Image 1 (cartoon, rainbow, N blue to C red):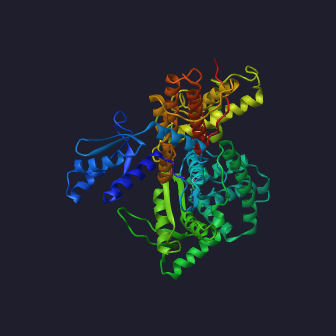
Image 2 (image 1 turned 120 degrees about the vertical axis):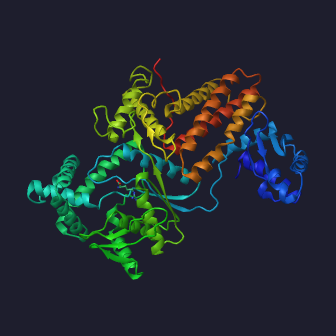
Image 3 (image 1 turned 135 degrees about the vertical axis):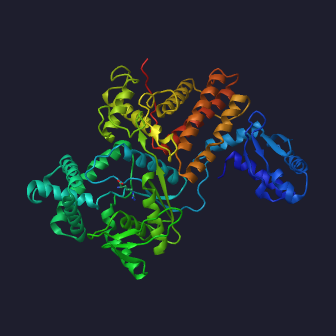
Length: 579
Ligand code: ARG
């Protein structure tokens, strides 16, 4: 059901245009730039004036005359050279609010023909602790996944674990260097493996031979060498376990835990395909596929590396083939650091050249980095890499500064306080990330990100808890939400803000941009706050008004809970604040 006020008014406008024989594509209605003058505006008459060879004011006046017969409008005026300013009737807004409150989707329109959308927002690597660099992919991707699902798409998320490149050979070589062979490889834990990888990195930086050895081992591993595979399998398993814990802590979820290694066979198929289509050629010992230069140099795709073995590009190309064939993907979206944009251009162009997914929509949504105050990549206080674990711990410590301790509040022992601290700390981290436009990086605001005031996750959680408390107190006085009526300016302003929910979610969906939702949630919470200060509920003039305001409050609560959910953030029933 389409309950968006903007769309409903748009429909009425289209009907009026059609009645006059005017092209209804010009009937576009948008939320007014001048809320003091009108709720909505339409500039279509100006656009039509030329083709209709008429004065735009004359056209606008004709339209206004038709609209004026509709009791759902309170005021229609033609202003300036031919702008249509439209205000809707309070009864119409009230009816709309009631319909939204009664609707399971909160008035948000479902997608007409649902698509199978594969989302790739993981990309952690074997033997590397997850750090802030992995935060954005997971946090943005999880939110987009929830938005798409809410709108009715068939979403399949895949972690695309980095488990098949040269680092694998580097780790195996390092273990061999250390132990003489791989006999102990399956006894190591994830910290030990991480240490091996660190040392391998140092060694390979200085020593070209060591690097070559690692490449050869990688190629052999990929070819199926039993001993290498056995050791690798163990290393992969324990790395996946560690990564799963990290994602769980962040409430970031995946349907599929596939890795680059799972695309091995398909990579072979892609190489065959390229050969058969005469797109493959040898170049300096490697098998490559040349790409078209667009407006910048475009390096070729490497199908098989010089020392044998598949690299990063071919793995992604083959993974797309699997996503189309096995998962029946209509769309594939990547939430990966924008520094990888050239890689994705190469991958997408390769897929187009190989013609195996002609109808697939593919897009890379690159994000900027999380920086510290100095503008450099975010580090711990002592200059170390900011691991996700560190970050979460830091956020919890910060939240503890504002929340009472266990035992200070009735019913809040260790378990309850820990749960609350966790919900708020994760909410703070995620909101701080998601309130920023995906493409831009941001400075991690250590001072303010976990505050209960300002544009933060905890502020929205607090706004929700406050409404919960209003509803509880009303209930104690046997006051339940009932029929919505709109009488005064505060109610009207709040309702018109609520009416923008659909547009906000649609924009977030179209642009794959959760920050639109974060922005909207923040303004809605603010508008509610002004409403509540100016239009008291329990001391309203009549019981009907009080119950209507309660309904509006409940609706705002339900919307904010849904919006936080779409951002991947939980809404505690109660928030505690140190006095
Ligand atoms: N593992 C990669 C890295 O750490 C990121 C993978 C992103 N996803 C993808 N399909 N390429 O750089």
